[in-house]
Image (cartoon, rainbow, N blue to C red; front, top):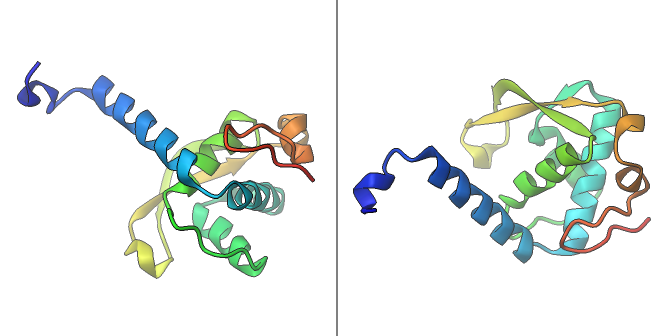
Length: 134
């Protein structure tokens, strides 16, 4: 297969996306990842729908320092979705964070916190980075 053949190859695009997410997850501070997942759970309890803008706002409010790789939030949201805390919608909003230059960000729907994985709700889910305890 030539580079030209990959121009319109959605399967290859999905593979590259998964590889990139795994790479980012492997380089993010495990403590930050756990605090970000906790922030998602908090925002999900407070709002029926939200974007990562509200999660970033919660992290700032909680005094959590910046992450060196902002794309790590994508991995956090995927973990939250796979464990039943949130569900992705087909709706997008323009980000309010200046560093995002008003790019579209996904709207997430909160799931009933009791329907999420008990391990996530207790903060002990294995995130393939570390275990988030208490």
